[in-house]
Amino acid sequence: MERILRLTYMPKKLTVQQKQSLTRYILEMAAVEQDLRLQSKPGKELTNYLIYAIDTLHYQNVRQIIKEYGYPTQKMVGAEAMKAFFLLVQHIMHDAKLQEQCLKHCDFEPNEKAHLTDRVLINRGELQFYGTQRQRLPDGTLKMLPVKDPKNLEKRRIKMGLTKES
Image 1 (cartoon, rainbow, N blue to C red):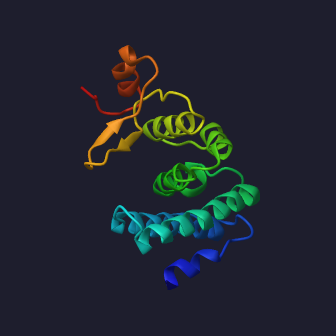
Image 2 (cartoon, rainbow, N blue to C red):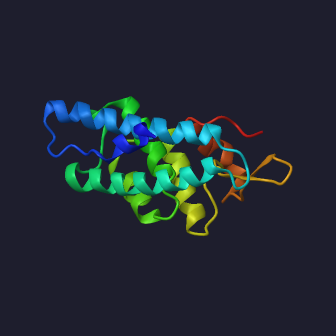
């Protein structure tokens, strides 16, 4: 719980030390959410409710980071923190506009851009493009959600650094 409460701190200016602080802050937020997600189980478990609460807090923090410092880049926070920032943005399910802006302004890796592009498309009710989004079936298996232009899916996936589906 102490780890969660520490996430309310936000640096104010982007000095060298605060770049480092912002980097640690992004990494810590992602670590908390990933820890919870790895512990979660289907159903009405307390962990699942905590995930929603943390996602809400992280949504506000991501918006605050962007407001105060602009969209993070690898130059600003480093590659590891950008991967962490991607995870945070990917889990902001209710704000496709913010996700779209991050796609435009953050220098995510190609495979991360593919995942986030598909997430935005699915959230808009459209077909995904790279085949990264899945639905968990009642038996626990994952089924790929419908894809636009399935004939050329493998070419698109390879271009973005994703593995083949077939």
